[in-house]
Amino acid sequence: MKTILMSTVIALSLVTTLAQAKDHNGKGKGNGKSLPPGLQKKVANGGDLPPGWHKKYHQGDILDYDIYRRGRVIDAHGHDGVIAIEVDNRIIRLIKNTREIVSILGR
Image 1 (cartoon, rainbow, N blue to C red):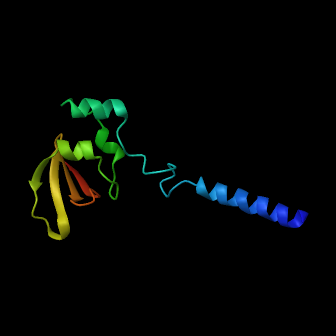
Image 2: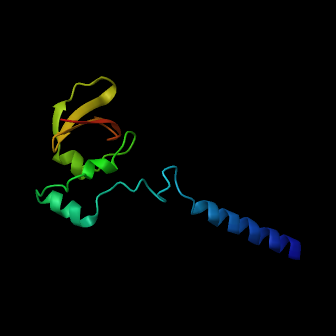
Image 3: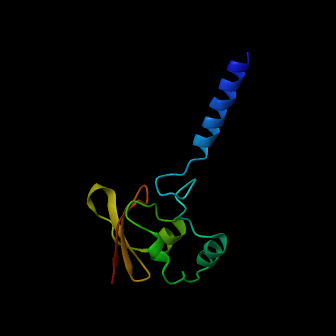
């Protein structure tokens, strides 16, 4: 009986440890790329993004919706659903439906 109980406790502890594991970016749950609430409010009210905001985004990340909304569409006729938007003198090529970043270019 003790063996079964100990096996159950060990199995449950392993399951909870795996549930708390970090993702492939090492940032824990989610991609950790959304704007803080204060910046989201500032952008929603038409304010500027802080300098260097683009440094936290990389190829394969999902662009925050507030930044996507702020951008101006440059090329909406891309192949495979890829579009280009301009945000603060940066050209961001992304997949329209998922907002997954394909590339970030500076001007």
